[in-house]
Image 1 (cartoon, rainbow, N blue to C red):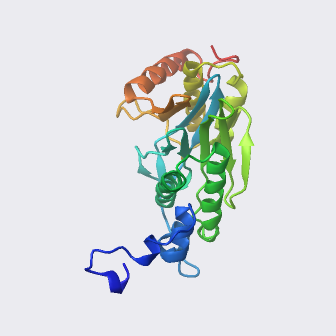
Image 2 (cartoon, rainbow, N blue to C red; image 1 turned 90 degrees about the vertical axis):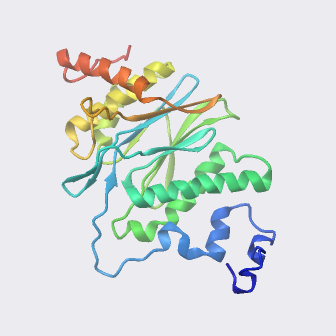
Length: 280
């Protein structure tokens, strides 16, 4: 708070001056040190920080599903077994994070605030394309940290109210964005998850089949990637799975995900390499 307003109960002039509908631009102008990518590291330093993987998403008939495993690693150590990597961005979109966990969560919170701020200022919501563009700017702003090994690589998914269907956007560390047709995966286990998705995906999936599809993909990723955590039946730690449809964002309960996980685990006892396409 500015010195001349301290103790007076008045907001600083910056809060009362008309400007951009972007909270990110406002923060960059008045408090740039609060932006996630503005924190520099000493030259030559190496930071050991928890990293999260793997995120998968798939479009189905009526919406999109996005899911993530629960493991965070730091080098060869499991730093956390139950981290959350999938967050609602607003009512009709969600972000799944891979990369440096602390920075990624901070970026997601700022992105949520960015969308909320825009809606309050403009009196309307951004289009899904507009939301994807705003996330591009935020990732690009973190490029300096990414070059020091603290990268954030999210997957953005949502229901496009204008087009009446689910859409998925993938990013690289520079903020480069691409729209994925059908399905997407990011993180260290993405190669294995994408292979599973490619084998099982089809365009006419129901919501229930899409949930089974992404859990199968995470299972396959965990089977070959040590940084990806598989379903933990003993500790009752299951992937986070969220659906986004014309009715909005809904995170499945642990009980709902557990039902799918148990069915898949039982099936893998007789078919360890997973189901054959098509998914039924």
